[in-house]
Length: 168
Image (cartoon, rainbow, N blue to C red; front, side, top):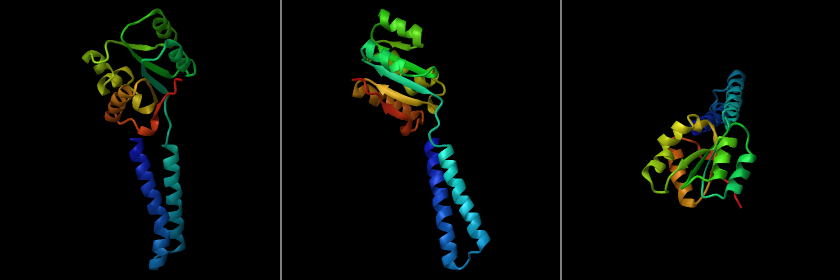
């Protein structure tokens, strides 16, 4: 949705900015036409800026992190952050993070179909219904990030809203 708005805003801007000189060169321009086209171009620029990158909060989707690194990522985020963490087993520190930060634990082996489903497009949209409106931070091995990016793409999360966390 945001990428379509950006494209449309850019297209409107180009049309608005290019229409006044073209009309003038063709001899069809009047001061009123030029002023109207200038206002049109300014409106297009404002639309792109207003609808650019406003997100509701953050979603952290991770696996394979040491609990200390995960705690560091969560501690730096606000109350509007949703964190989803895939693990093969739950320990006391993960339970503490679950209670303290509301960490959503996806427990299961890496290739377990139930685990993969919870990290698929349908699973993520159930766990975080407004994921399209959030900034998404990925942390974990490259193949995990690729899988989750595919799910985010199917959900139409703009690529500009997805980034990789630095954990080292």
